Amino acid sequence: MITSSIPGTRSLQFTEGRQAFETSVADLARRFPGSHYAVFVGSLFLGAFRKYGDALAAGYEKAGNTSFFVKQIKSANEVRCVVSTIAIGQ
Image 1 (tube, rainbow, N blue to C red):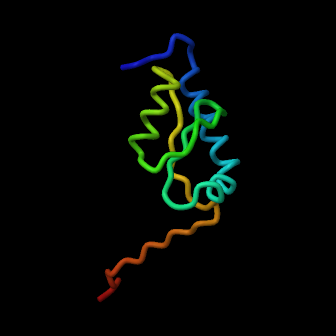
Image 2: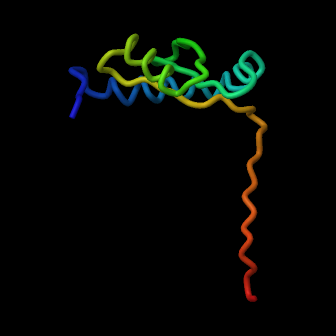
């Protein structure tokens, strides 16, 4: 298990990255249309990558053994709907 030498640093960086992503997702979706993955180390935006593996590699390269945040960029207003083919009661 990898741990930080400073208690709470790992979760703080992840939380900051998630918050930074959430506040900038609309702008990121406009700047990077299509399927991209955003990488944040704390509140610092490292970049957007087409492949998840490339995003992870960039995060590890910059953050090393500390936590970082990677998430696929989608429109803030995107709504997903899953329709089941199972008919209830039949």
